[in-house]
Amino acid sequence: MSIRTKVVDPLSDFLDDEVVGGLVLLLAAIVALVWANSPWSDAYFDLWHTHVDVGIGDAAIDLDLHGWVNDLLMAVFFFVVGMEIKRELVTGELQDRRAAALPAIAAAGGVALPALIFTLIVAGGEAAKGWAIPAATDIAFAVGVLALLGSRVSSGVRLFLLTIAIVDDVIAIAIIAIFYADGLSIGWAAVAIAGLSAVVLFQRLGVTRMWAYAPLALLVWVAVYESGVHATIAGVALGLLVPARPFRGRDVHSRLEHRLHPVSAYAIVPLFALANAGVDFGGGALSDALSSRLTWAVAAALVLGKLIGISGATLLALKLRIGTLPGGMARGQVFGVGALGGIGFTVSLFIADLAFTDPRLTDAAKVGIFIGSICGGVLGAVLLVRRGRAG
View 1 (cartoon, rainbow, N blue to C red):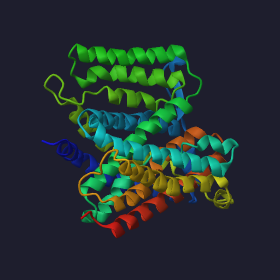
View 2: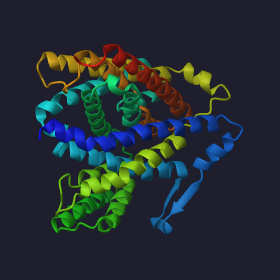
View 3: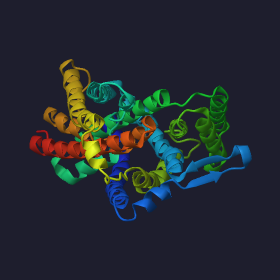
View 4: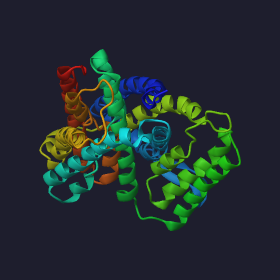
């Protein structure tokens, strides 16, 4: 069996979940926007600002519902992302250096140029903290657009886009861990490392029962949260430790992915959208956002930065004979893939929430994300349809 066959076949269920998940995600975002601008908008914002205290005494963690969604539930989302990265590194497209080189270069171009465009437009100030907002590609929405195009795009295009998005996620995760940490606590970081080491020890001892790892996973999440590194990094680290190949005769990776990926795609990510996509456009907020440099910096970085960054880096790498395009994908389709990379919805919203404490900046960034993601999706679809399938 060729490397490419091994990559495409296991991804079929993953892609199916992402397509349907993208539709649910879109519905949740629309509900959030409508609710936040309805006569019941106060109920929307009061709901997500409701505080929930979990724990006992000094050991308790007090967060509002918005915080629990972003810090705890999104850790599960990033756990699934971590597992997918591990699979790609061990048994997928990223295990072959030549095959991985091209999407890795494309993803790097699709992170660097948007960050540069954003930084040049905002020209300093508090808004400059959002430079990483256009870093990642929303897999669910991007794959959903490809699904709408049906047979007009090949499986090679889907594979190339998905691999770029996965590398994007790796870069975005590193950015979150390095640039959006809040005062590192060495003690709690040591506890987190000890918890991860215990997971490795359990694996060495041959422990296969998933429930045995649950207390360790909770310990790692609490320790990372208290350390000042964003709690979702705990999910990524734990996901990377899941064996990608059969472990003690059991395919732990597939079992976990089949259980958790639908939960992530159909429940957690839509719930995140419901909690984060609600922007109140009343009281001149929309006109303020549309007149804000930050809004257009985000939109331009997503649309132009991703399109030029991904396609430019890809074509340059091909000219230098670094890597090859997947079978069935024409060079002209690189531009469509680059445009679809501008759909940055989920992780872009996530980073916007980390970057700003001023609600006006957060809302302006979100409007820019909406504009950029919509334009990127439409432009990508148009370019792919015009270019058609590879001959």
